[in-house]
Each structure stands twice: as C-alpha cells, then as structure tokens.
Image (tube, rainbow over all chains, first blue to last red; front, side):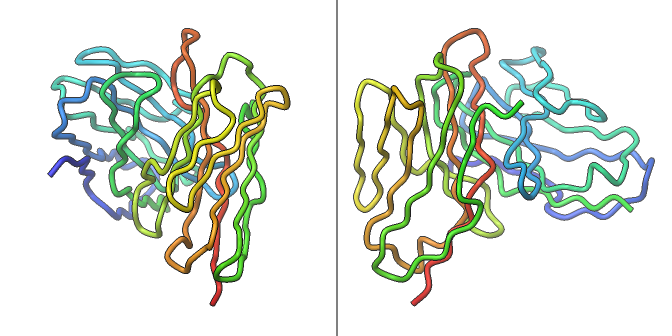
Length: 113
Length: 113
C-alpha cells in the first residue's frame, strides 16, 4: 500500500529534550516536506527536500532541523524543543515539487511542557 | 504574509444543503488550486484541483468554481452529507521559482442531520 508513515503519533516531552520524528514514504517520491498545523493558522511548511541531500527552509524553520540521507526517509529534529513547538506535525511527499498531489502522513501530535 | 485567505473558519450545514467555502489569493503567478480534505485524526488528502484555464471543475458532488479576474476560487459541496464533515483546506501553487503549495487556514465543516 502506498503510504507515508510517521512515528511517533503522539509525544509528550519537556523543554530542551531533543527529539526526532521519523517520516518514511514507499512511493519513490523525490519531494518531501514537513508541515505544522495550528488552529487558525492552517498548514505551514517547516522544511522541504527536493531529493537526497537537498533540503531547504520553508515558512517556519526556526527551531527545527531535517536531513535526507535516503530517498524514502525525511526525519524532523527538534534539538531543544520549546512550548511554542507544541503542535500537530505532518510529513508529506509528492513525485516532484510543484503542481503534484501531496500525500500526507497521519500526523504526530507533540506536546512540549 | 498570508497569500491564500480562506473563509469561513467554520461552517454548519444541514444534511442535503449546499456547503460553500471560499478562498482568495494574491499572487497572480499561482496557476494550480487544489482542495484538501482532512478527517479527524488523519492527514489531509487531495479532494479536487483546478487549473485556471477552466472556470469550473466538477467531481461528483464536489465542484470548484474559479474566478481568475477576482483571484478567487470556491468549493461547493452539493447534497452535503454527515460523512462530508471534515476540515477543508484550499491551496495555491505555481511555477515561478518557489513551487511549494501555500495553504489556506482551513474550514471546519459540520453537516447536521
């Protein structure tokens, strides 16, 4: 089954404790991105990757890091989480950047205390 | 800077009625306008998309109407059903060097019996 998977689905952590949210897709997509969803703000792009070893900042990159060492994986790293990073996070992938259907993962709900 | 404005934020429609969600964009270089549907606990999924060479696209009970001169597009759901209750996001994208999708803030639609 073609899908984007994320882990964990739910995470409670404390300020400053490094965490990683994993994302994997099995569709051989070149383009992957991370979004955060907050009430009233919609979906905002954090980082994106056009291919292996090619990543760039989205609209709200502060406090986040990413890496793309393999085509299928695109982990999101919060090196020192803060309460304002409490949010619902989605990983998405598409065949290419641009006017392509984006396939979203199931989401990771993060609470930073 | 919000480039895609979506309204209303929430909408309650009676079963069998017509649900209408509106979006307006600023950048005239946008030329791809998808709508994504998100059910609780799930990631968004592409519902329907339109390109500006047509003024309307219909898929089943879902129709996108597009007004290029007004820089507006809308989603109409005919014969709305309780199963249509979800959050809907409009988005805009294009080929102008920054091809990422820009999402609206979302509309929570509730269909009541």
